[in-house]
Amino acid sequence: MSPIDPKDVEVTRARMETDDVRLSLGGLLRGKLALITGVANDRSIAWGIAEAFQREGAELAFTYPGESMERRVRPIAEGIGAKAIVDCDVSKDEDIARTVAEIGKVWDRVDVLVHSIGFAPRSALDGRFADVTTRDAWRITMDVSAYSLIALARAFRPMMPAGSSIVTLTYYGAEKVVRNYNVMGVAKAALESSMRYLAEDLGQEGIRVNAISAGPIKTLAAAGIKGMRTMLGENAAKTPLRRNVDQEDCARAALYLCSDLARNVTGEVLHVDAGQNILGVVSME
Ligand code: NAD
Ligand code: 0WE
Image (cartoon, protein in one colour):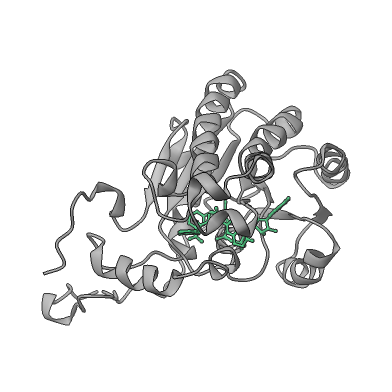
């Protein structure tokens, strides 16, 4: 691979020769059983993670919330050889209990649990925070986006052996105000804190719990956001690496966190954001 000539690097969207390469390390997760939540379609961050885990030799199972999502998820999950595909709306305790039972029919353990779920009522993601953050919006957002990590961890803990791990997806809006991210930012702060408390609690069983803080990526969840295109363009121009991140970047971080490469890493928020979070004031000169 030749070194990168600075003249060839575009200011707004630095591309690298290695950009489209899907990493294959030859069995980093060989024989591991991975349960993946949060696949909506083939642009989902969870799907990028699933493909990478598959390449590295993991067996996969998927969850989706409700029949309307089943039509999107089942075909691609079957195509990748999923061992189970289970209906699990994480806001329902009975769905989570049934998911444990269903997974228990095909696997005697779960080595990796990927939590890639976030939801806020649309009306709460646009407008003045004080006005749009209703009690209902708060309750739903916190329940689906933060509490669900705790609920899933509790439900699957009995099936998770020492050396297993849980990874969740978070966003910078947990740490600093990102306009319009609103109650999702509050929920991501709760999610990150819950991740740390779980890491401490489940550490005694040898279960690691970590988070990936991803930069903005065009997925189904992001497609519904006003001004996302502008945000992605500006982001690519401003980040230290002058680029956006993608699903494969998150997948590589997940491979690290969920493999023995990170055997002594827990309670960590790993930023996969082309360096965005280190920035203070950015001059656009
Ligand atoms: P996505 O729309 O593909 O995934 C979101 C998933 O959440 C969907 O699969 C959806 O089915 C699931 N979900 C929503 N409500 C649910 C419920 N009640 N029960 C079970 N599942 C439910 O979008 P994505 O961008 O891949 O999002 C995945 C995660 O990554 C989310 O936690 C999101 O906040 C986070 N994240 C996204 C970005 C981004 O810019 N796209 C950046 C950082 C973090
Ligand atoms: O976590 C997210 C998106 C989460 C999300 C998206 C939607 C859209 C459709 C949660 N709930 C919903 N509900 C819907 O009805 N991201 C990190 C992507 C994102 O969302 C933003 C962002 C970024 C980045 C919202 C405002 C500002 C920036």
